[in-house]
Image (cartoon, rainbow, N blue to C red; front, top):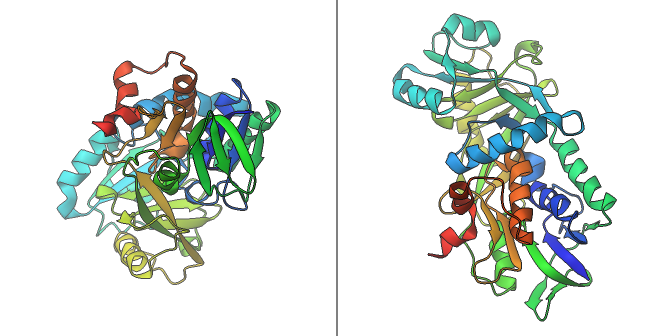
Length: 357
C-alpha cells in the first residue's frame, strides 16, 4: 500500500514527496522521461525574498533558512538591478518599494553593468539580497530524501485513470493503490483533478519565452546582477557565461510542452536592446516554460475541502523554487493533520478552500 502517491516530478512534487516520506511510503509518478522536464527545468532560478504577493513573500521568508543552510545551502549571491526609462518613474517607484530596493545613480548602474545605455536608462535601483538557486541540486536533494526513506520515483508514468474506491486506484504504466493523492502536476493539475472526479480550481498556464545570448561585448558576466525592466517588462540574467533574456510575457496557453513565440521573443529582445549599448547579433537557443497560476495569483496548498485525501500542491507560478521548502512543509503538515508553522492567515490564503466559495 502506498501512503502518499504524488503526481508530478517537478519541484512541487519532489519537495512534497520528500516531506511526506518521513510519514509513510511515497511514490512519485512523472509523465516525462526525466524529472523537472517542464517548468522546473526552465526556471530563472532566482531567490528574491520580496518577490510575489503577500502569501508568497511569507513562503519565501519561511524558506530562506533552508535554502541557505541545508546541505551547505543552494544559494549563491547574484543581486538584482531594476532599470527604467524616463517615462517609467511611477512604475520604478512602485517596483523599488515592493522589492525593497534602493535607488542608485546611472553612473553606479553603468559601473556594475557596463553595457547599460546611459542615454536610455534614466532610473536604476539595486538589491544585493537576490541569489541564484542551484535548482538541479535542490531537486536532487529532495529526490534523494524520498529514496532514502524507502520511496520510489517513477518516470514515463503518465496518469491515465484515477478513481476512488476504498483507496485511490491509479493507472499509470501500471496500477497503484494509494491512501492519499498529492496533485503536483503543474499545468495539468486540473486535468488530474478531473480524472479523480474532483472539481478543478481554474489553473491558468502562462507561457514565458527565453533566449540565450553570447556574453554581450565579450564581457565577463560572473559578477553582474540580474537586470529587470520596470514593470517586469523584460529581464536579463547571467547564466554560465551567457546571458538569458526574456520578454517576461504571461500569455495563456493550454497545458503543453511549451516553445518560444518568435514574435514575442523579438519584442522582448527589442525592449532589452533599448536599454543597452550592445546589439543582439545572435541567439544561441530559445525555449519557453509554463508558469501556472490560480485565479488569485497565489499557491494552492492542502487538502481539497470536499475530498481531504486529495491534496493540492499547485499554482506555483514563477515562485516554485523559492517557496518550495516552506510550501512542501505546509503541504505535509496539512496532509497529516499537524499544526502548520505559518500564521493562520497565510495558511488560509493558500488552502484550496478559498477557491471553493
